[in-house]
Image 1: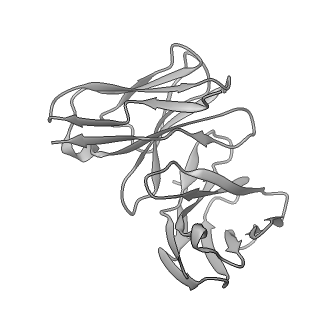
Image 2: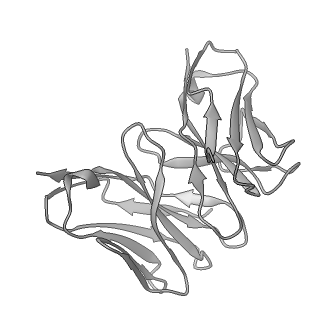
Length: 112
Length: 111
């Protein structure tokens, strides 16, 4: 079935540096790609999403890029801050279904 | 507007016991989902519903049953709990092409 691989599993960056998390997928018909942030003990919260007809989307310090040919999408966080420390999950919506498939998560630590 | 709520927040069961987790949403969303979250494995879909009276299996449905008798509620049942069902359970809902919104989670421990 559809699979989403997320890398890296952990990432440590200095405050102010950039962080990049990448997800690859196999089903070329997948058409919606959200990213979630989950703080310790809290629920996942949507931070940004992108649809397959768009190559890039930005929201302040956060951006997502999608390469449909290579079947990968990435989350970019610039000027990282300690409050960015959390677990980040990529996901995709399987084409023709209502089922979301999630990556295994990336634990981001921003060091002050 | 409470969004998505889950009951209970925590529960400890003994092997073989049964229980029902309740998810409620007040946003008139058509779609509702139950996930489990285990360390290092992300979120895995158990069951989902595309409308009142409908349910469908996700990736890991074995050992669970669901019902959606009312549009605003989605119930997850464990008939005979097993230690492998120790997990954090999240409910989510959405409308149309809009994103999913998650509930606060239920932490279940099966001894």
